[in-house]
Image (cartoon, rainbow, N blue to C red; front, side, top):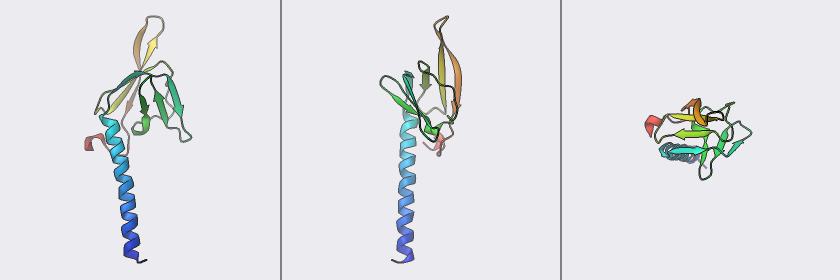
Length: 113
């Protein structure tokens, strides 16, 4: 094969991957989340995913390394927001208090979306 064909193939391949990542980040950003965390999963790279009763949230676009999230915390992210809020319930008074605020740090700026 000629150099031109190889170059075109790899260019299309990387553009496709770049486009796929962008579409998934855009889709995630447009969702609205508000749920109580029932399960916390951390992969080998340190990325965290939390599950609620009906929803799942991946912190891929947010700086989530070594953060303090516990079961029964409440996660809130409004659609198109650059921030994720984590609230923890105070057992004494039964009220949720803000314990963590995460800013967007993904591959694509949310302004593009």
